[in-house]
Length: 422
Ligand code: UD1
Image (cartoon, rainbow, N blue to C red; front, side):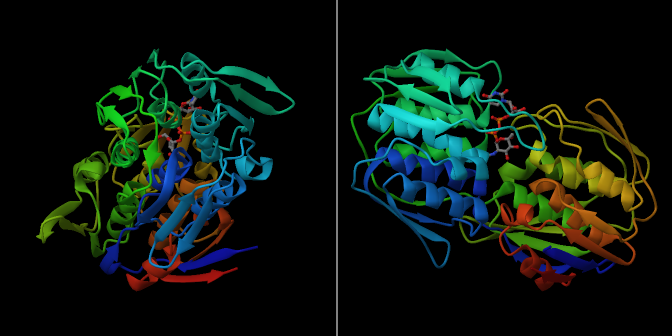
């Protein structure tokens, strides 16, 4: 079984460059289904999930190729197949994002029903409600969701919850629908803004990006473009915490500060200090410096601009070593405390009460053998290992490969003692 072996206790030092955003690149790749011609993407992270989406595009009849230097080229000249392969949908839930684009492009889509995942049931009812409002006839049978629409027509849609994936799916479909679509209570995550900018560059008419009301006026066609994906705010947040938990002094480049405000603000409340240096017009470098101790804080996960659920496990690790008691409320997913068991095995004092984790700070964690249950839980265990006394063996690296590009290499370059065995 693949594993990281990490010797804890080394203060990280140096600079790390943050990769492009996985969660922005995935819908952007799905959106190329809508576009005629060639699209060149830059700053696409080299990750398992990205390879799965590229395979999906190929299976649907596009040509997609990951090139060196984080570039992806997608060519869309052939007829799109409307059936998405089962193994690719089940490999990654985000594959369901192809539903809206395939439907809008071909008038039909047959997508295997995505199952739940370890952090929650994750239904797709909001996606379906939105696509139905655009005129899709939807049938669920034999494990597939089938969509049919001679023509999609714009409509006013209210989301019960600002689902990231549903906003993306419906926004993509609406770009080629007839007339105007209004999505109310839409998600406002930076990844949605990035997808919207990409679509607008390709000829779409989307207004209200970054707010909770999106206005999309349908157009007849979209064309291929050149586009660079935003930095990964979750990778950035993870490295900010890696610097702080190791009591090190590191800097991050290729980071968008506005996207990591919620995390930095909580870390500042704990006593971590940041300074920002401008390098040229668009480049900012963030320096992280942590003292020898830090304070407990309470956290509640929320849709953007609130504290991201994707940073909750990593922040929990950090707080296991804080002075005092922190309460972490998980309000986005119903079962996102799977890392708690493993952190307890490393000496953390955490009690779960429904969707709250009560974290009582301890003076040290101790290395142990632990298992990764999901992507961000994996990052949480790596952070714990960096700070722990002794050696930690972390099993189940396939989860980490979904979301962290060159994780071991980046940590090693900062002075961490990480051995990766496959
Ligand atoms: C995206 C991110 C994921 C992040 C999540 C929340 C990608 C590829 N993934 O996932 O990393 O943790 O946003 O920020 O961008 N829900 C429903 N019905 C639906 C859709 C969602 O009940 O139709 C529920 C989900 O079960 C979950 C919550 O809404 O409890 C949030 O889900 P959503 O915002 O859709 O997240 P994803 O797009 O799946």
